Amino acid sequence: MELENIKPDIVHDATGTYCPIPITELAKVMKKAEKGQIIELLADDEGAVQDVPAWCETTGNEFLGYKEEDGIYIFYVRKTQD
Image (cartoon, rainbow, N blue to C red; front, side, top):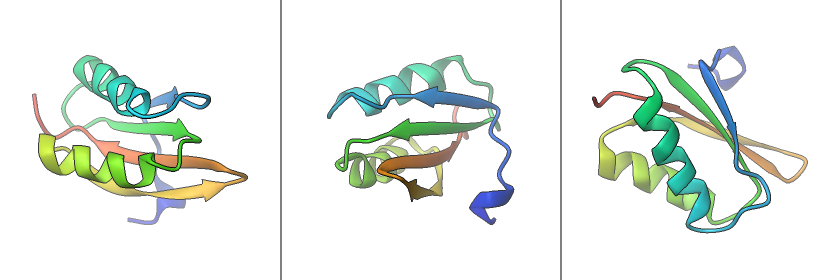
């Protein structure tokens, strides 16, 4: 799936926060999301580049990829677990 074609259901801005806050914020958003929804997470913490895919692997949610624009990392995650 091309990242440019992804239409997120939920956008969450975690910029200005540092590890572990982007992941804890993602976890909170995931609890509210419905199965199958796509979350777009914005973060400027470079550590999130490794943390988000690792979190997805640990939780069983689907990491769709990320892109970087002007120092902001934009992650896409599909909720696959209830």
